[in-house]
Image (cartoon, rainbow, N blue to C red):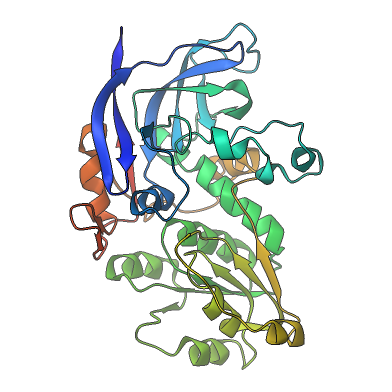
Length: 347
């Protein structure tokens, strides 16, 4: 039996390099992809911390792209040799959520997400259904293409929050998600600011040429009002998953808070009275929703600068060592200063 290298999640704090069988076709709609590159997502870090949904003994990695090497007899939209990006969340298209335009809540997702509940892209090969495969244009290289799905999730958030050219926007956290939100907001909004506490990522955030505030060193509520003529920001985006309470402090009356980042270990306390009194809209989005093709178009047109976004590309075999650069010491399970924004793996 032909085997391949893969990084397998074994349990909280444990990920191991293993030899596994190369996946085969088991359904007429299956596509076999030779992985070209896979990004390490903040969700993968949280899986290792036990702060995100997970399944043990699964190959992690959902930010991947590659080349089609085999297809099932029912596949018609891609062919062998095509370069493709993937939406890692297969949907059924038949449940009430799918049929009501809320496919991000599809009942299939909790069982079929690639890189979480089914084997993902920290490997040499992946099997995926045709429905999640999207052809890549030649203008998008393999490293950039790792962010098609990620950008798709951010675009879902942008669609939900309805950002306008006159808005003032505050992005809480300048990790990879915060970076993409900030880059898009700079293309749209009248005023954009971002927060970050990690020294490395503060340096990356400063490349945007906008106000970068460290909440450990400044009074963000006071500083935010100074930047917005005393009223607060029209839109506040929690790109971390821990900042909902703070976001409500920084948003203007009548403004919007987007709860985007995910951290299952965090609880928030808020005053419903003040949400009502200030007519604040709290919005939530999950994954992408009809946003993969828009993400491909944005990357193809080079609408955002990803130069500072990608820190390093390393071989799959060295992938375990990447997590310490992303701020998690797997030996101690302690958070440490980061040394990277986005690290990508190449099999």
